[in-house]
Length: 292
Image (tube, rainbow, N blue to C red):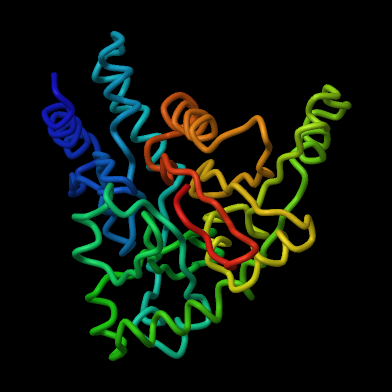
């Protein structure tokens, strides 16, 4: 059974079980990843969690019965639903929203369809897109991607949005750059191999460790680090959340680094977390970041 058909069967079963309206939807994520979700619409609440079908479809393909899957999904709904309404009126007021506007980096070519609907600014083979941070006692922490339609509601231009995001992002999410050796030592709790020290690597991200690759766009951030190390830099886009910085070496090349990036992207990351297969080079002489 294909996932769309599976989602429709589950939707009907949940409507029978709950007596509530159950809606199905396709959700476009980063890098054109399409997920399939359902919402159980409670009469006492104006917001419902999206429950994605992919893991349940996999369970079904592995032999789990539909009745058991339906029960599992209902338990998730019971655990995560809100018992009252949530006021989104603040989101229509630019004065209330603008303090939480920031930007992140995503891949340009892998998001062409999405970019037709959202404000954005090209950056190398990447693109800056904008979001609003949400921190609610009811909903928890999250983000809302800003679409062109939101600009109409707020009565602002894409340029106004860009200026606010450019000012906010480094303040809300300050850059953090640390030694890979120290980070791994802290995580693992013991000393790494000596080779790890001889070939230093650094992780650049932001204070929240989310969408941290955007620090590449912070004015002066990479330049300051290059001056500190007194070296040009290679920058590896390890994910949307961070980049890895390495120093050029006589026995190294951009091609070898690109092979490493491609391997990590294809074997270790979720599709929506991939930033790029490119490797970037920062030149101290010209103060520029380019594709190597």
